Length: 432
Image (cartoon, rainbow, N blue to C red; front, side):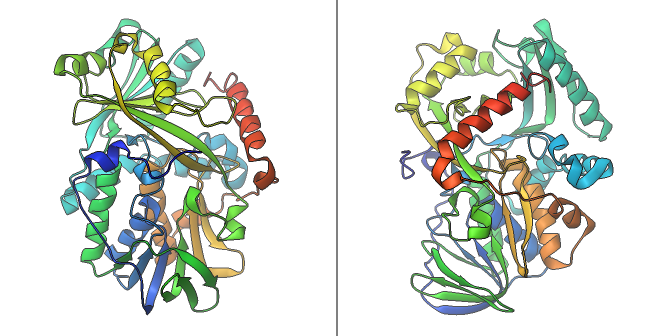
């Protein structure tokens, strides 16, 4: 098992030392949020900006303990892995509207940072990397799709020797440069957003796990030492739900991703790795992703491609993947490695809506490994739904939330089968 208490790059380099009290009283609010990651904090902040400030947010551990504090920090375009998987739910027009929505994420994050003066080390520049002719064709189509949305950012397809202008690796045949994307220090972004949320008067409680929920016109959430009664509730736990809400537990399954961080590198080596100091990923169904950091380190991550398992030595496992892309880093030391669960939905698209028969109990989950940027898009739309309703919320919440049958008994087998199918299908979707 992964040591979820282990240090990560984010906890080692955070700029905010925030401590919020645990809940030890019985309080009454308009909205209660369960979960202190991007989903919970972002939705609460969007609601606070709309004037809904009587909010209580409950986090079982500390803010960013879950996926928000364990990810790659990649600012990518898009929502979900393959929009064709949800075409039957939303139709062709819905796909187009979601494609338009999916390009908003980087600007939402940048605007949030600027508005509240958040110290999040945002850096523009993203490279989508292709290994072969099939992926090259896919990247050419992505270039057309991205440009059709009228982006104000530079978007440019690269091939052959041009690829070296953005990445110091011989592993790739092609690339799509999107200067609207990039990377960010995820934990600092979250903590800055939490500071902004508290400035509106919302109350944040850490080390306050929800242990019992009683639904009704007024929902009561009991913690170990107190309780919150509210008119509306949001479940925002994702891969750390821990079976607390059975209806939501049945519709995602956890797999794992792993990251490592190198020792500090010279300016010359960083320039060789990434002339744009950017973030990158290939476009395989299960990607390698990496970026340079403000401290001149390389952060590299991936997930097991077929057999679902947790490597016994995360440093060694990540290192061998890193050296396939950057063999000239063979003498570079890996200082830190970590990992964590990520909740995947059957269609690999985020799940948003309200619980059946409980219109005041909302949820968001199932980012399927792509959460940094989509969470900022999805939670803006979710806040619209929780506040006054909107066509965008109606669209996103109409996507089917299916069950994962047998997940509790056969999770490794189901994840292995899912990864294998995901990889094989990539050959005819241009991703392998």
